Image (cartoon, rainbow, N blue to C red; front, side):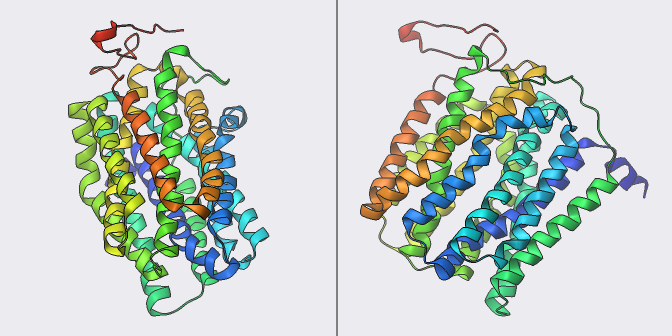
Length: 401
């Protein structure tokens, strides 16, 4: 009991509890999505692209979180966002036609994106710089456990017991609502160490962080929208097979994410992101030419593995940022991340209709641009040392402004 009392007094355990709830519901929604929309509403690449563009609009509007925080504390806001997301997932199965799918997706997305923006802000505020990468790796491992439970439940309840989409969504969303209310009651409110600015702040010296976020949004859509859709449309993966693939992904996260976090803390953000984007160039090119289901599945697992390295973008920002800027820039960076995310799915969804391979070649271009940006990160970033221009062109530093 004393151990439990100590744990509930630590903000890190609250962050880990929320990190468990979010994927327990969202991972199930995401795993079922492609099969649900194809089987119930006959979606093609165009409709799935539009759906994901609509889903990303709340992410594009995430900068408005800073205005909500004038009324709500960040911790309360995060928990309320989890409730909205979980409730929308719970009712998704009751609206299988196109209008209902779009509406429930948008409501779910509002909760999801506000939660992610605030969760990221709280993590960067509560954790010391030297521990953040390792903690984010631990949080990814917790996320993996929750996702494994979600995908395992799909395999058992839908694959073996043949329950409906409606019941599966209701179980997942209902569980999210119940667990969120529980931790809302159990954990106290934690005070933040630095008073946060309650206005939108864009600083010139953060431009590289903003650029990395923008390209990260574009890269994520290739993986989440088109790589996953290819599995169903091109290779005919069933719900059970997709869930098994996702299970494998999160088993890798569970095993390696904490080690990756420690590794990033040791080698630095520059090295980690160079490795990620170099690998993605190869992965996206292989997506464009893949012709066998097993090779596509292998690429999908490798692609997912690289997501863990994206921790480095956030720890880079934590090292260069004024502590009072974190909440504002967590919201602004989410909006920047989703500028591409709103446009890319619908545009590339139309490209998909004539050439799925071209979609992944565009992804190669995204990865190349991201690699160039990663090369501009200093070996030891800090305020006043945010960008490194290779010595061939001289060096330049952007000062605080």
